[in-house]
Image (cartoon, rainbow, N blue to C red; front, side, top):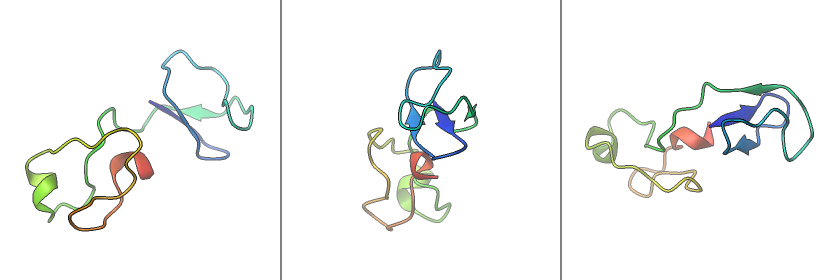
Length: 69
């Protein structure tokens, strides 16, 4: 998944060249391709529980998920 460096909006297509929210061509592809809890102490992080793409926070510990960063 790409993420816009200007507005932070995700772009779910790998082939995207422009941000669909702000039109910027400043996309970066360093976002993980699975959505997990970012808290290393969370029990869901240890089991590699994968959240849906639209989940931005862990429902166990409240930490941000990988796709919220």
